[in-house]
Figure (cartoon, rainbow, N blue to C red):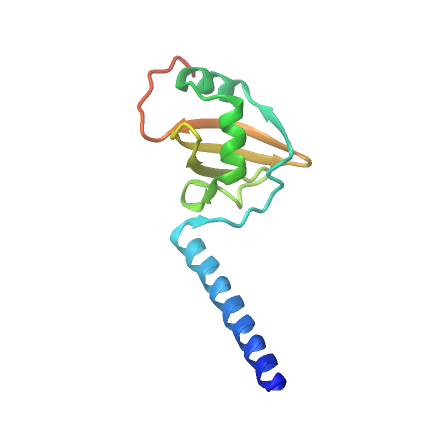
Length: 128
């Protein structure tokens, strides 16, 4: 009886791992992924353009951190193979229900915030 339980446990683990792997591959094929090839908690550096867009679109640094924590990568809007700096588009909803896209470029132990976009609202902006 114990041997049968162990075999069933192994089979269930094998099935679980294979379905997770398939789901991750499906997500990547669809252009959206939860897998992150950089440290979400690295120090942030805001570009001048990002600061301007944040101001125009009423996006706070707290909301940038929220998207970094819970957002998913939209590979259709990312450039992971860009040289010299790959760029990633993270998307998600903030606690205040803003639907944001944050474009970041990982650089050593930092994340450069290139721009931020509120996807459901068209804001007038003076940024170049």
